[in-house]
Length: 523
Ligand code: MSP
Image (tube, rainbow, N blue to C red; front, side):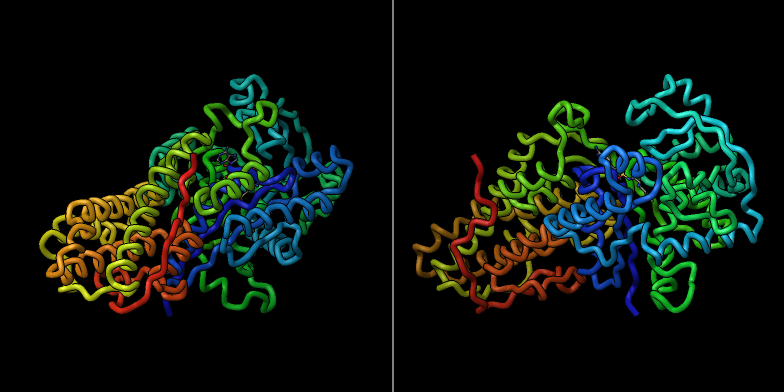
C-alpha cells in the first residue's frame, strides 16, 4: 500500500461569493495534492463549505432568501471557481449534508458521555463575522469592534452548553512544545503558545436554534440548541472520512486517511484550528493532525481589499485575469509572489511582470527555442546525445540547479515553501537558457562536423525543459501538459518519482512539434 497524504482547506462560508482569499488556500492545497499524487502517494484532498451560523442566517435575511437557498446558490459559484482554477479535490463537503450532520451529533454524544460537556450560561461579546467569542479584555482593546471586519461586536447573554476546554490546555501546550511541525510557520506557533499560557476558559458550544431561524445542527441532548458553528465546521475534517463510524458509509476512509497530514488555513482562523480542534480531538481520544499551516493575507494594489474601494479581487476579477492570461498563470502568481505564511500584495502590474519575465521569457522561451532547433536541425526528432549524463560544460551549467531540485523539492513542498520551489525551477530554466547562449548550437549548425555536439546540446535542453515542466506540473497542470505535448510526452507519463526526475529519461527519436508559444508575451 502506498503512503497516504490527506490535505484539507478551510470550508468556506456561503454568505457571499468566493474571492482571492478562498482561491489562495485552495490552490495551495491543490498543489500539495498534485505533487504527492505525482510522487505516487495515495492522496485525499478535501474542500467544502461551512453553511451554518449567524453570519449565513443574517446574509440570507438581508438577501430575502433562506440560508438553505443561499447556500445552494453560493456552492455553485465555489464549484465553478474550482473548475476554472483546475482544482482536483477528491470530495466537497457541505455542513448541511446529512452525512456531516449526523456525525456532528455523534461527536457531541460522545463528548457528553465522557462528561466533556456541561450546561451553563454565556455572557459576553461575539464577533458575528468571525463567529467568534471575544473576551471582555480583547473587546475593550478593540473598542468593541471586530478586529477583522471592524463591525461592532454583539453582546450575548444566553443559556448554553460548554465544552471543558480549559482542562485540555496544559496538555495542548505540552503537545505544541514537543511537536515542532504541529503549527507552522514558527512565528504563529509562538503566538499561539503565548496566548495559551495566559489561560483559556471553557468554550460555549451551542446557540439557541430559534435565534438562527432553526438553521444548524441540533444538539442531540437539547434540540432547542444548535451546535456552535465552529465545532460543526471543524468536525468536517473527520466527518468527510466517515468518522465517527456509523454504519458502513465511507468504508475504510477513516483508517486510511486520518490523521490529516496538513490543514491549510489563513492566519485569522488559526486559534480555532490550533486550540479548539486539537482539544476536541484529545477529548475524543483521536490522533491530532500532523501540521496546521497558517498562511498570510492578500491586500490588493497596496490596500486592504474592499468592495467599496473597488480593489476587491472577486470571482469576476479572477475570471477576467484567467481570460486575459490563463488560469495557470493565476495559480502560479499566487504561490510565487510571496512566501507562503507571509502577507502579500496582489497588483496587476506585478502579475504582468512575473508573467513576462518568468513564464514568457524564461520557461516559455526555453521550450520554444529547444523545439525550434530540434525541428530545424534534427527534423523534429529528439537527437541522440554523445552521452546520457551531465559532464563537461553540461555539468558546469546544469548539475547544480538540477541536483538542488532533485534533493530539495520534497522538503520544500513539505514546508509549503512554494515560492522557493518555483525559484529552484527557474534557476534550472535560466541556467539552461544561459547554456544555450554559451554553447551557441545555432552557430555550430553551420559546421558539418559538429552534428554530435549539437545533438548533445539539444538533447540536454529537451531534458531540462522536460524536467522543469515535470516539476511545474502541480502548479500549472494545463500549461505543463501543453508544453510537454510539444516534446511528445503525454500527461499520463508525468510523474515525480526519483527515477522520472533523473537526467536522461527522454528517448532519442521521439518527435517534437512546434512552433510553440506557451506563454505569449503581454504588452
Ligand atoms: N468557515 C470558516 C472556516 C472554517 S474551517 C473549519 C471561514 N471561512 S471564510 O470563508 O471566511 O474564510 C476562509 C479563508 O479565507 C480563511 O482561511 C481566510 O484566512 C481566508 N481569507 C479571507 N480573506 C483573505 C485574504 N484577503 N487573503 C488571504 N486569505 C484570506 O473562516
